Amino acid sequence: MGLKILTEHIHIPGINTFEVYRKHGGYSAVEKALKTMSPDEVVEEVKKSGIRGRGGAGFPMGMKWSFLAKPEGVPRYLVCNGDESEPGTFKDHYLMKNIPHLLIEGMIVSSFALGANKSFIYVRGELMYVIRILEKAIEEAKAAGFLGKNILGTGYDLELVVQPGGGAYICGEETALLESLEGKRGNPRNKPPFPAVKGLYESPTVVNNVESIANTPWIVNNGGDAYASIGIGRSTGTKLISASGNVKKPGVYEIELGVPVEEFIYSDEYLGGIRDGHYLKAVVAGGSSVPILPANLILKTAGGEQRLMTYESLSDGGFATGTMLGSGGFIVMDETNCIVRNTWNFSRFYHHESCGQCSPCREGTGWLEKVLYRIEHGQGNERDIDLLVDVAKRIEGNTICPLGDAAAWPVGSAIRHFRDEFEWHIKNPSEATRKGAVYMPENVLA
Image (cartoon, rainbow, N blue to C red):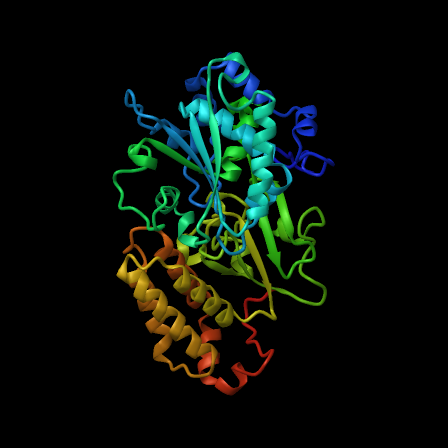
């Protein structure tokens, strides 16, 4: 079994309470950081760790912290993005529900490092029971002297607020989240200025996701170099993977970055293989917004190298033959899955969740959904495939936020790797619309 940084204690009975969490070493990072380190020293350890943001973009977290402006007399804020709206991703929810004090400890350490005296945890509104869990944990930490005024007698003050979100996918984008947090419609902002300069309430702000912040107690306690020694290359540390689909053991897994994809899918330690009697057809490796890969390309790169669970290996070859680790929403499909139907389903989601601010996204996502609908329902024609590619290209890179890209990439990659399946739907409309009928491509692995 690999090293567990976030989930080592998650199955201990009562770990969601302050007493049990404290008994197993909880809040020791707060004591170390506030009593023996300066804020700059904490930032330096995070930079040395090489940890990259675990929300999807994979930007170096320490570098992001170092960009934070520090004007005199202006407050700074840390905002934790717990919205987690990416289809196929549920690991932040898993952490907040089962070990809330890990996130609270991470928020205290990170807020201290950034000079923030008021910080926020933004959780999507559908998860009210998780919000209640976090609020209880905050009250416990405050009662024990780890939140509020003069924490542990160090002179550092921190107020921590849990804010219910608007229940919109767009609010997972950091500037839309800040708009929502301010009580406005969750529309993304034009950048620059970036949140590090003008974020929440027009003040310098850092936005990190739950998993990213939950790593900071371990980094403070063990050092950035120790964290950087885990993983491989620029993909350091561990990563939570939300695994779903046609596998024997779906769930949340903490892996050391660098595990071979084939091992992750087929070993008993992880997913246990494809369900009995079926074969691997395709994988969406990082949540619904990343390119889908057929079985042969998810296991090996185009150059024949074994593909690894890292940012670099999964993206090897670019979008022509690669994908992205993204948020770690690992969706596995066997040969009973229809790629056209799944792509249409993804497009329905993105059309519904577009904020409508940018016309390429507002109009383009609707086109993608409509054209995919008619192909899936036996009404398509040969021109529709190239029309989808054209619309996707016109959306990609032409919007304020990445939602447009997130809508375009699944469509483009599905056609790139499974064009024969789209053509089969168009040429065999009566067969394609028959319940349970699925085209079998040649690149399915037995």
